Image 1 (cartoon, rainbow, N blue to C red):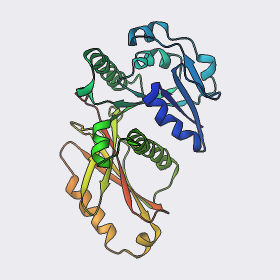
Image 2 (cartoon, one colour):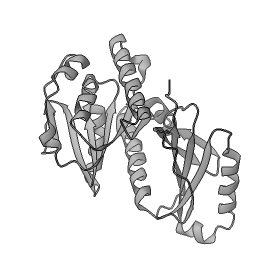
Image 3 (cartoon, one colour):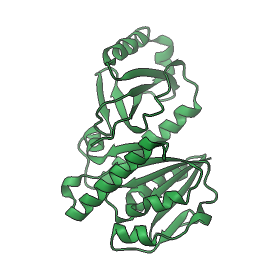
Image 4 (cartoon, rainbow, N blue to C red):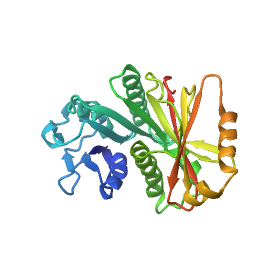
Length: 276
């Protein structure tokens, strides 16, 4: 059982999408949240400092969390100040943080400073090994991937693509590939992001603009008809992968069978470098 915890409205909106999927234990933590037993309400506070100082002991409500936890949160919410207090209550678990970076150009000074602190702390903690991984996601980059999005349904569309990437990541771990030309990322490469890649157009778009990438793995999902009948596809994949080899970046790929009519590819990116 995989545990997904949403902290604050941004994190909860993504985490609750996992409630309809089998094999997930979902916890939603926010100020004065209402809902079923999976919802954990904490008192509303006026600042991130107050959330950090007064965050309650909810360890009993987290007792059913598995050994592996994914915490999803947005950087602009005041409650993100309580994130480290929350993680301390998840002792001896493998901690993975999915950090959703807001558009800081529209944040006030206080919110911008708060976001910067949380953003840097999570990366430092991951690089030091206190967390297993931190996955950085930028709402602005997601918007660029989706193109024009109407106002109604804007955040729902962004949340859905974040959910799909995380859920696909878990599916990859449990699925045997048809072709596996991958290597595990370096142990020190703990700062990560996701991305999408269009094989035909040779266009790649990451969920966060990374500097100094150590490892990059392309996960191709190919329908049965293409796997059996397209004699040029494997050659094209290999050629594209060779083109992407760089001096400091290790490129690998996997090919999976898919029931989807459309072929697609998710990318996972790993770096040891703190992203500024």
